[in-house]
Image (cartoon, rainbow, N blue to C red; front, side):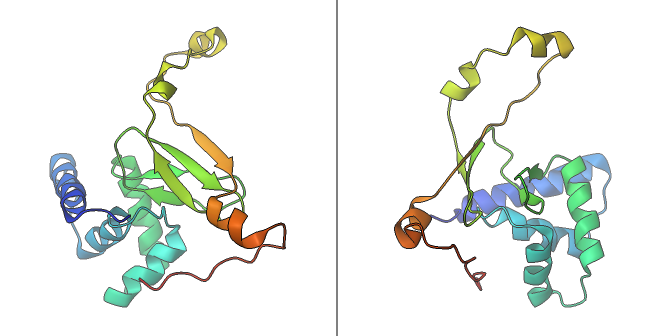
Length: 162
């Protein structure tokens, strides 16, 4: 289940529009770094993004990737996915959604739930201030890990060479 060309084009158009509106220079490096995240549902970390962008743009540095990701996050074109005891992972899906995280292989999948937005905000939280957004992260063992590992020690899968 990959992203459609239309969705990738929509994300790239949003990138261009936000950069133009905010007065941010659209450099080749920034565009390629954003394209790498915008073209996948994998929620890659900075090192993976760097490795993949270098295949097309060999001179890009890891520092440039980190700085671009930070800027893109400030522009709200990307969000950081918080996974306990993992490197920061990034998501270009700006639509309201939530995440399912496999605690064995680290796969992160997006899911959508209107019911989740019906959750009553506790009075204690409301007393701290207003709530502008909500993200839910569910953790478990994905069906692939459950089928293939059957209680055996888990080995990290090799990175795909897509």
